[in-house]
View 1: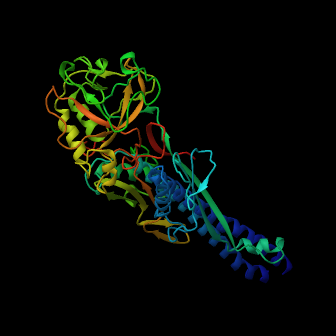
View 2 (view 1 turned 135 degrees about the vertical axis):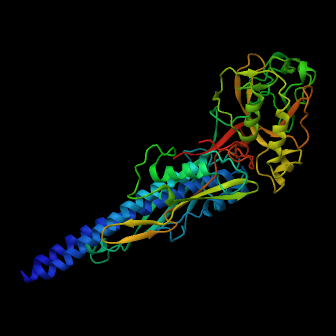
View 3 (view 1 turned 45 degrees about the vertical axis):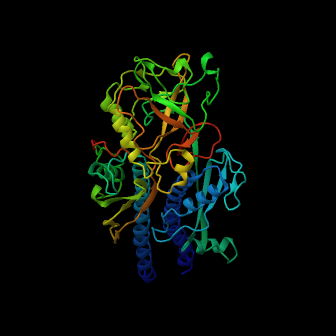
Length: 350
Length: 142
């Protein structure tokens, strides 16, 4: 009988290992899935304002992934924001002000897993008051990361920077681009005209051998790249831009189709576009910016496509897009949190 | 001897119970990992139709990703015994004309732990915000 009593403790320890620890592993996995998804949702919503941090916290905590075998919602999730993946972290309930550059979000999900068998064993160690539950914690960090390589999805046009003598020798980002100004995507035939931002710079008036396209030479393929971000050619800062010539007038239709994918096809400034609740980000695109001097890729910029009907269907029309300086590329509905010009994507950091 | 006879009922019960729960948790944990990976995959995959009903090949790829850990379906070793792509459901949340979130779940899967069978309906389930490319005019290829 004494043997039985002693071995019962050992048996409960074994049960505890199998069942309580098993549940803890499952809970950890569930919490990790939730934290990953919540951190991504939140990082997508960060836009550099205090209100954006609050909205991001709401976006993160409203993720519907559950725990305890998909029966219980997460509560008490800690949402923090920072300007880098290394921190320091600021709790989103007291948002930083100003919130500029706060582009990283850390989500810590914690759940109390009830213990059924382990307390029998731990009661001996704790003098009769064993822990009846244990907290299982999972953490994830997601952020808006500036991209210097686009393996896919870049728009098949390349505006020219102002880094040469005729453009003002703007050798650092954003290379003479001014937010809100229109720059040329495709130049008119024989360099007869360009968009307002390029006007007056003779080096930007490209001739027929390079009209602003890059990558594939087929108008049909370029059209698909315009409509669905299907660019598959990888491009990294510093590489020579594979420029392509030709008028490719049919692409105008594809650009208009792209504009029409958006809920807002009429607003003609980026700020009024963001203020329109119907916008969905389809008019925001990322393009490589090429050097006026040697045609290498200087960086990636985000541009806003003009309203429906603005793109001419002849070779003599120039096609323009508005430079917007920074944007969160994964979700064009959001200007992004960063004050540094560039193209950003939301990714899990850890 | 009598003591062992009495005690063995408890011991056998404890043993089968431990196996039942321990094995169920193990399988559930594998499913949770698979669903999480599948939902991440769905969130990053190119979405190519203009409404919240995903194309057949989108669904197939996500189902294969969950069931086999391989979107192409070349590898057909399921991550849990008897799990088939048909047990995986994919649903798309639609907002303002673009996909906004992907939810992946296991449905109608019988988790058989020898001494008991548990039917999993919509669990595990994971939702990710959509992060991939939206290519509404590109026909579904693979």
